[in-house]
Length: 199
Image (cartoon, one colour):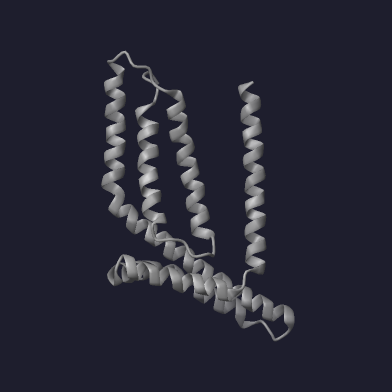
């Protein structure tokens, strides 16, 4: 019975992965470059307004390597294209892809910055979870497999949310990265504090 449930979960995960990939390709083919460019500008302005100009400069300096290499590749790809309708569409897609990669790199480095700030919280939650588990080993308290499973599912959900946040070409609130760090700390605490007493 458990094997059948695992097979069904694997099938659903594969289905949603293919669906997500198809949606991403369709979005790439149809999203206007102006939309991605407006998102890119809005993300930068929001970071500079809320976190300060120094945080925005640090993120840009870190993401500059990825943006620069993507720009060189885009320039090489667009150099041989002519002026026909299909080639103009390909040039527009290359430009949109370049802005999209820049947006993903900017968000990834913003998440890295918040991750550096959130390391004490993540470490404290992990250590507290381990100590709670050790205390429960000597007490007459049973571990909760449901809460442990919630922690595992939370971790997976955070991974999917981060992947979606990095790849969606729509403006996202600046609060998304700190919320990811806080949810990661909470899921680690649930995961570690409700491990079985004997592994």
